Image (cartoon, rainbow, N blue to C red; front, side, top):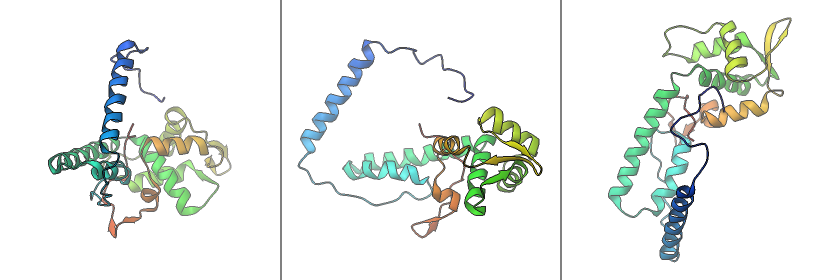
Length: 203
């Protein structure tokens, strides 16, 4: 899915060892469930500040069932480090910047289509880490070759229709981990989400 090459360390087919390992994991999970079925769960609402909202959604249920404070702290440390890696990696991706800019302009302007020049201007306005700026011609190339989006030519230049590209825009939004809070630049629990708005896909 996308431009990446197939990884040589991942087998093309699954052998018996995979199914045996999967069965062991299922058995362990079932045993944990049986041992803890009647134990009350302390539902926690604590939010780890400075990380992506989706990561908080994943971590909060885990923190609710983990009783050991050391393990809880280790999990928090890991997720903060992981979040930093996501920010750093995706911050170097023009593709993610372009998708974020398209979605942000769609939310702000409420248009049915947008010009490639407007996308380029928004990317350059949002970017503060790239040494050079993207020209509209380069943005058009990224749209077609890398993101499989379909701009078309009009009197005002090449434009991108939100309706015609809706499914693929939503796919890239999910893959890059962009949330509605990112697009709207909303605050979380009264504090601004200081996380960079560009993230790699979680999975």
